Amino acid sequence: MNTNTIRIRAAAVFIRDERILVHVVKNERDGKIWYIPPGGGLLFGESSFEALKREMKEEFGWELLNADLIDSFESFHSINGMTEHEISYVYEVSPLNDSDLDFSIREVEEEDGKKKTFEWVEFEKIAEEQSLLYPEGLLKIIQATRQSRQRRQVAASHVDVGEKNDMLIRKAKTDDLPRLIEIDLIAKANQEGRRDLISSAIDKDECHVVALNHEIVGYIVLNYTFYSQGWIDLLYIKEDFRGKGIGGKLIDHVEPLCAKDKLFTSTNLSNLRMQRLLEKKKFSISGVIHNLDEGDPEIIYFKSLDKTSSKTIKTKIPIKPA
Image (cartoon, rainbow, N blue to C red):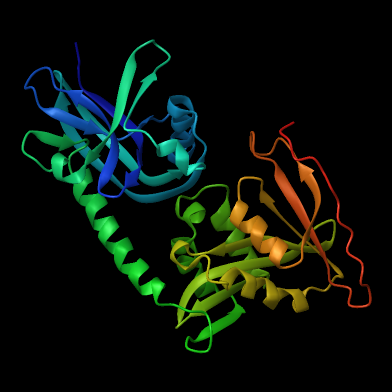
């Protein structure tokens, strides 16, 4: 009987302070303790990101707010007499509701009736002898990613959008595409056709980038694909630079460029930060589309750019799952 297997797995790394959420497993052969992040194998036809979302929904009932692909790598290991060749896609993630992580230990029942126990374990404990973060090599990847992110956050914390910083908003160029893919987590994970969308927008002169101190930190796409009206198709700011007014600057930039008197855009009901930004920029709710993302309606926003009109029609629409 051949006990060797090959497997592709998506792993979710939840981090709080100096602790990581893991499933604790004891190797029956040598007694070693393995710490395994949540996640699971890909189904045929699934991308790693789709598998990650499915597993989090199945195991915890969670919707994901952020999922940042931090690395992918191969590993070979033996556990309980079986040798496995595994390809891992590792995402650092956060749930839609941060309060979902407010527990010490959580027991999850799988479809076959088996139970898994998840708990928060300190990195220091994982580094001890006889303790392994599965698969091997994952701990170094997480530590390197966290150190890099901490350095970027320190740099970003000193950024104040104003006269002290060199801000430039301009049309995107073909050479900007790799940088935009790097900062956009959806494009980086090659999801939702985002790379092709950005590339097409650049070719059509629809994409505008914002650079702070010569570093591109965000972009916006303005086109007329929504009933031939002005349409902000995409607005994305690099994670470390959010909440600093940069998104508002991009909207301010494209409004006078819009060839129509009506400007529309949309965002998910779960995206509270974008909703607050649009309200601040005097957009109002124009409608709701259900059944695009399950349980997370798309809210359509509208703003009148007609300088001769002082009226803005505000629509009250019940936003409930269909």
